[in-house]
Amino acid sequence: MSGGSWSRGLANGAPTSRTLTACVLTALLLVSPAFRSPASAVEEPAAPTIHCGWVLPSVGNATTFVYGPDDDATSVRLAGNPCALNQGVAFQPNDAPGLTHIVVDPNDDGSGREIEFWAAVSHPTSDSFGSGAGSVAWSVRRPDGSLLAQVQPTGRSCAGTSSPGPMWEAASASATGTGVLVADTVRNDEGTGLWQACRQGRIRMFSGRLTVASGAACGSYSVTTTATVADKSAALTFGFEVLCPTDVVLDAVNIHWDVTPGGTGVVNGDLDPTTGSAPTVTNHGPNPVQIGLVFTPLRRSDAVVNDAIAEFGAALIPPTTLRAGLPRIVAGETVWFSGPASVVCPGKSVRMNLLVHAPLDLALGQYEGSVRVLARAGGRC
Image (cartoon, rainbow, N blue to C red; front, top):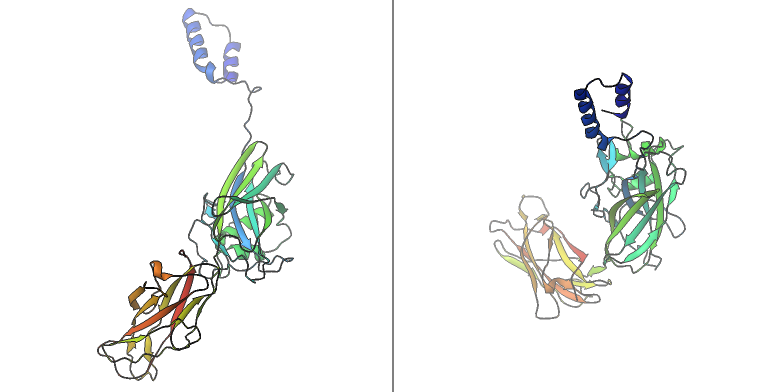
């Protein structure tokens, strides 16, 4: 029973019996704890919503920000909780892993790398952010958890644009994008994409920039976006990955095995990086690296028969008694050496022995293929 209906009940006349009076009083006692006068009701202020957040690297110079591709060509994917539509509303889970990969000093000139943070926010009071009543900021933390920077935003308008621009392309899951936005989260036929909602004023876009200095620690950085309206706040944490620089050189250009059917051929490496026939792997970069390999099948160069050699082996031998071996490697498989002997320290070289296992029924002839040597930052020296 509401306050209004209670008033009308009294207006119909006073109670005429004790029983009726008792019933009315009982009803009053039951409803009175929940009774609120419309004049005294106070509406709680609403918190803002942070729909999505992301970070993009610049491929321009120190004075011009240019949107471009992710620095890790293999990282464009839809894994890791990107920003996606959930019942027509853009949404990104909290603590999403970093989907953007950057190299801090791509030109190797000490200039560092400029990156740009983005946030899509909204509030039930549509003009809260547009009028300046709301605020957005980013806290950026290094891989060890220490604070790198507090970044302040600039409001960005989507009005007047007839199609999403290069920022949206760089953020989306396109061939050159970072994959932080599922494609239909930008624009879709229902008109619920972020770019469309921004044009309609239903969300506000903010961005801020930070220069990550040359020599910054590689690893996972966390970014916490905080949006505030009045005394109500919302937070969303995502991240980005600073790739550890690698610079590994293999001196051998051509490898020649002499092998009989059913036998194993071996080419032994050495520690002299100037010999072109004995494989030597040298780490010229600033970080310890681990070494990996990918072989292609060896096929008859004259194509008379369709025979192929598809089994290989390899060993890394540092200038110590240690040894890291991969006795069986299948063509097309990416494999990585493991263990203490697999780490090549900065400025150091290791011998690489390469093996081929020929099938017993292999036809005689000349076979050709290739091997790729891979390097990734990791391990301790």
